[in-house]
Image 1 (cartoon, rainbow, N blue to C red):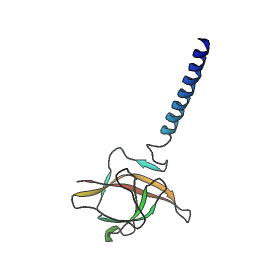
Image 2 (cartoon, rainbow, N blue to C red):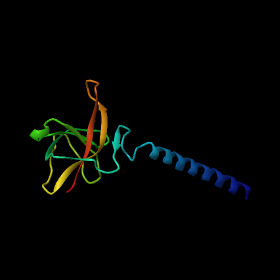
Image 3 (cartoon, rainbow, N blue to C red):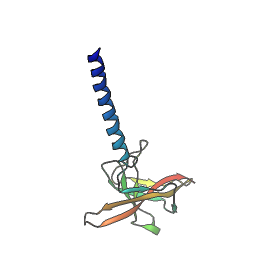
Image 4 (cartoon, helix red, strand yellow):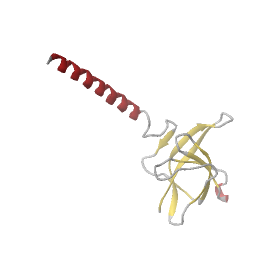
Length: 127
């Protein structure tokens, strides 16, 4: 009887340790995104943009893209990775006429020239 209680105590301790470590890991991941991403509670600003080109897909699946519209040509934005869609380099993304582009956060990163840059995190949403 004593051995059964002892073994169950060890198993319970191991399970609780893993549960606690999993909890700490989930708290440190910012909802699955890096610490360099700040998401707003609700979309902030509408961008009048209709066309993007992915320039780089990051290891976590997020993608940096440039705006291809003449009004904001060259502006860099970040698309967040999701389970429904994956991105690839040089992919063209056109915004359907019944949708709009909203800024949902910001992303900071260092360029190859070691400049810190902050760009909008965007999502294509229903109007």
